[in-house]
Image 1 (cartoon, rainbow, N blue to C red):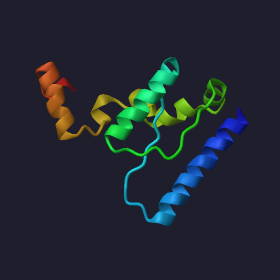
Image 2 (tube, rainbow, N blue to C red; image 1 turned 45 degrees about the vertical axis):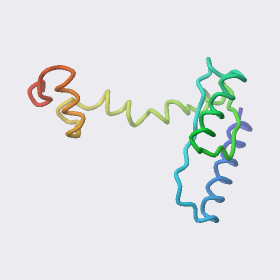
Image 3 (cartoon, rainbow, N blue to C red; image 1 turned 135 degrees about the horizontal axis):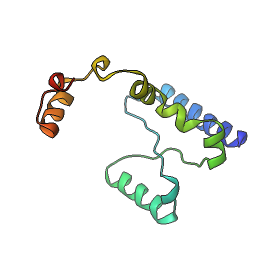
Length: 115
């Protein structure tokens, strides 16, 4: 489990170093296929869709469920979002104008009215 994470961290460092050396000005992302969908067909579909959109995959690998759980990777990833959801009152949230408009469209009232 620790070796899975160390391998991932090494790949991430290599990608970051490659981008720094090349002076890359493009975006980069990590893409995860949900555990229930990890099949050869799904992996090939993702690669085909990326290729069709001009997206280059420069590294790929996997993490075991045990590593994800042990290292709390999901908890860490969603932690900031979750902490706001459970610790702040709605009136304390910084809601952007576009989100307020979507709220009004969905619920038929202004965000400030709902507070």
